[in-house]
Image 1 (cartoon, helix red, strand yellow):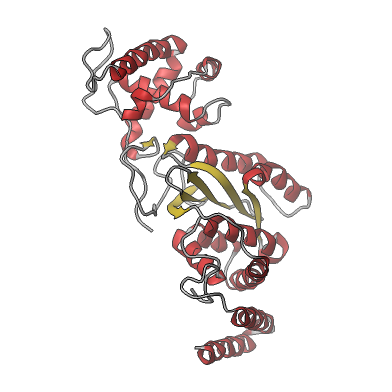
Image 2 (cartoon, one colour; image 1 turned 45 degrees about the vertical axis):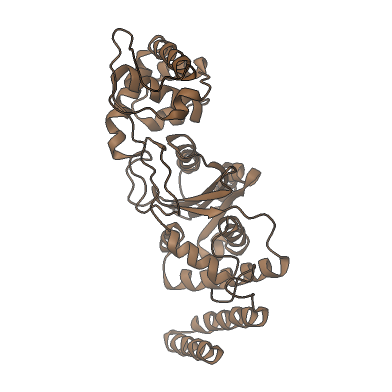
Length: 380
């Protein structure tokens, strides 16, 4: 349950040409046959969760080197290419409405006897990874793609993507189920992208630990405490509209904060879902995970609760953007050169032949790989 990375990519319209997509599926199938022969399905998941490896895979498949389709089209090709029976890994979900089919796809795998794991835990992982990157890390990117990779033992990886329509950019989020203790404390090992934002509500940052504690305290106190904070928020909004940029007053019992408030906090509309607040109070959550799993808790409600907690208790959250920074056969846009279809087809055939011969035995396998190397040298 570890998020390993985030990448930012320009939004590009259009679809992959059918002739290219067919080849992406075929080449993916052969690449992952090699991986499943040489390594375990668990290793395959680790590779997919590595944003650099995933980016290299997309370039090897010839789709593109830096577009939003690097995620959606590559995952689409893998969904058609990989099967639990052949590769030990199933590909669930996808873009748009397909992302919501993960729960039923998990049930289908279990019914077919291909998955020995708790369906509820897997469904929870799918749900929480999406909820964290929607509400716990509020970076301005709306999720529209969610692909869930799972092996027969229940290990999983998630590759999902959000879009910022104003910037015409996409951001990719990677998760892995190994070595993670919870979903909401530094769940990544590397964050990739080409631009850091000034204000990102980041409740997964370690420096948000104290803030999360007071946020949970606020929720457990009940709707009355939240309503007090909402009154102050409304007054601060009025001050902001009146041209004041600093906090001039605090109601009795509210602690002033020395940390600046993000401008959008004072201009955004606050719509509190009081039924959700009431359910959270009755639930008495112990962790932020419990809050995120409650129906009706989305980005707006969590922002409202977070600001209220900051104003009442004087404990700010982290505003640090968790992003750091991120062709074998050509690319679909002709960058760095057009896809060479003949070379692409020969690569698929050579790789398929090498794998089939490799399965005969170790000696034959080495000879097959040598022939593949000779083929590559002759191609260059």
